[in-house]
Amino acid sequence: MNSAETLERFRNCLEQLLGLVFPEGHHGLLTEVLRKRAGRRKLDDYLSELETSYDEEEISRLAAELTVGETLFFRHEKQLQTFIQWALPQRQKARQTLRRLSILSVGCSSGEEPYSLAMLLHQNFPVPDWKVQILGVDVNRKALAVARRGLYSSWSIRETPDHLLKRWFLPKGDQFLLDKNILELVQFEERNLNLPNSDLWLPGRWDVIFCRNMLMYFAPEKASRLVAHFARSLADGGFLFLGPAENLRGISQEFSVYYRDESFYYQLAPEPQPAISPLPLPVPRTRRPVATVSAPPRPGLNTELLRELLDNERYGQALELLERLPPSPELSLWKASVLVNSGKLEEAERVCQTLLHQPQSQAGAHLLLGMCRRELGELGAARAYFEQAARLDGQLALARVYLGMLLRRLGLAGLARTHLRQALTLLEKESEQRFLLFGGGYRRSAWQALCQSELERCPK
Image 1: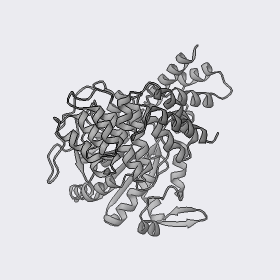
Image 2: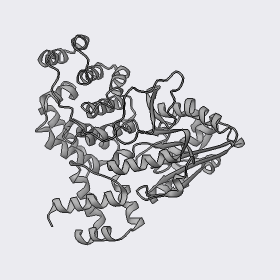
Image 3: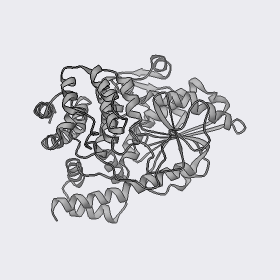
Image 4: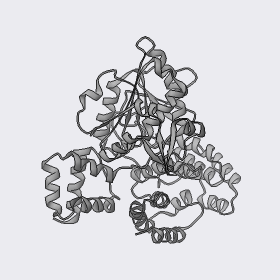
């Protein structure tokens, strides 16, 4: 069996067992994981075991190797503010008679997300007077063991507000132990969400579901099925929060999407809400092919003049040039790029958010959003955006360069090397237009040199 057939067989196993899908461009990662898990066994024998038996421990280990495990407390702060300021008051009002609140954290990893929600509830909700359930589920058994201990490094709490850090964490050597009241508020269960889990999806069970940075790993039909479970198990008017690099386009029509305070969220109730208008973007019933971001610019755009303006850092004139042309997603992508280069990150993010539902500009918008989050020091969000850009467009070389650089900075040398090596190959074929769009003024040779330098700096 040749290597291509072996990897395709491994891909099929992962999709059948976990629902995970890995498009072209992940050969290095899949090969590394396959060989590591097979150990001294022949690859064919190992794959036969995966195909014929269900080994929970092995599946847990595969999930840990192939999905993003790095997380932190109070990740994606804007979404958490929306949860507290908007979703929580609505659910409190809806449940006033029963005085019961149930929250599900899907793909909770080592527990930082559900524990963050528990701390926010203690600060903003009458927890003692209500029956509150926060459940975290994940397929990674090792990560769940960390979650149940509640003992975390300084890296995990790096974005925790000082007043919450002092209130809920007890220093223990060079680590931090969560307060008993927070530990007791959260429960954890090992779950493979590719399985039925019928008790998890009882009708009306949940008020809020968090499923952030997980759907991006699922095959389309598996993601659709999982979101259908969310819709069935959410109470009327319940809320769903996805990762900043994810959306329900082509996956579900059962939710209304809203944008508030720089973050998207979804609600099961179809009625419009005061002071927030749903995005006027219909969700198609079938997934359409995702176009790459290399579509040619509209005829009116003079790319040579734009390059000259950018080379001389005349960003105001570049924006004026773009504003004179008829609006389109392609031109909005150019505008966002200019705004990023000129340091106007908030304005750039606003433009990018309007492009996340546009097939021809999705990958580019995610890449630019990742650049913004990186500049703001939000490395977790930046990583999610870069990964999604690479998934949406497997030929987008700069997405892998940025991702590889970030992973090296996070100490994930193995993953960094994989993406940087792929980037070196892709950079050879990358279009000049995309260097202009996403390259910050640097040409192909400069990016190749940088990529090679980053590879050499990755520890073996």
